[in-house]
Image (cartoon, rainbow, N blue to C red; front, side):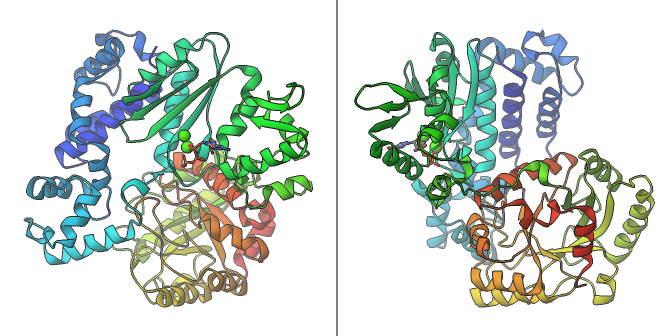
Length: 578
Ligand code: DGT
Ligand code: CA
Ligand code: CA
């Protein structure tokens, strides 16, 4: 039976594609689908068991949506969605995601120049044709050319950002787990290793008994637009998002060896296989086997396979053959940071920032519900064109926060700000006004095109500013959409060490910034790190889990992350150097 999560995700897709059809995210039909998707997510009973009239009577769902849900339950498809998918294929959706393009302009480019993908746009830009489209001047053309250049690799090199892949894998796994006989369904591959982009999604399902039903369910998933392979143990589909999903079905006693094999990385697997061979064994997705006798030594869990090979169990985020096998052999793997280590959040927006969604009181309550010992509220400083907050706005927020302190004696409330690092390294307000804040992070939000030298000076200048306690999302990258600013890594790390400025690990799935290379380079330095969620909604306080997974990929131990420190130590550090 189709799950509520699947229905919600298809309604979400309808909303996204309707934005393209209408040329605007504000259109009534878009809002209706979004509201319906949210409503379905919050339901307890399965929607698939309800009649059209019962569905239409639910809050947030109307007649039109109810009809589509029934069509989906009865036929496994929504014809209207299939039409939209054909009109706006993944390559066109990608085009609308190029900074500065958006749905309206993508439609104009398509209608006037036949542009249907980023590659088409690249060629049209090279030919100087874009400026001929009504509403696109030479200036727009220049900006788009820069945005496209910043995208980096194109065409076949293109990989899917982790955010989209995680959503998809979650939907697939939930659907498969609902099939009788399936005891686990989990994402493996680069997704389990938490790489920031993935080539495809790999799923392993454990089935007791006949694998037929789970395979049948898989190839008929509503997000499938093409079946690439359909076998008893292995199948693959292409999904509407343009991402391939590989499914492998295994028996319970093979779970460990299958998980190990399909998690990879290939380089990590090769190292393990070498250790097996040295001992006269073989290692495959079916198990660790004594070559001479064919006896299975271990296969049910990853732990027993690593143990048999004389290794500590290696967390998936480390499996890149980047020194983890040597460390595991010596019993010296780091104790990686975990979500429970975090005692506070230091990058949180409210609706005072133009892009925040909920008032201060709601964000503070949500942080308190997580059991935090401290919280930094950081709406945007006044320099940020559309979302910035002026001085009176900040002062008013400060008194509101003051009023909340009594209600939350267990949580230190810091009145902070997310400053905007200008092209020369200056930040918002003046030193006197800045001194009134308890906390400040500073980040780059504009001028991504300055050269390496200028970006370096810019970041170092911000670090030397006594008001700045941390650099938020240090490179400013948006995964799959904007490469970060270019700077000399070593010089920035040295600057952070010297000034005591922390570097943020931004937990938003679009960012995951500082990048892994930067975190790994911090291992040999005394750089203070910080995990910030950049939450614009209470739900996004949960981004901390992504920040932690990303930090683990960078070998980060809890002691190096300032918001794992107990309240007194953290507050003392936060106030120092100001
Ligand atoms: P991706 O999809 O490019 O982001 O990266 P992965 O790591 O998910 O790679 P993928 O999907 O090609 O394969 C999934 C895992 O399966 C991979 O991490 C290790 C394992 N694997 C696949 N092909 C081979 C192979 O030829 N040799 C070995 N040792 N392992 C393989
Ligand atoms: Ca993969
Ligand atoms: Ca694969």
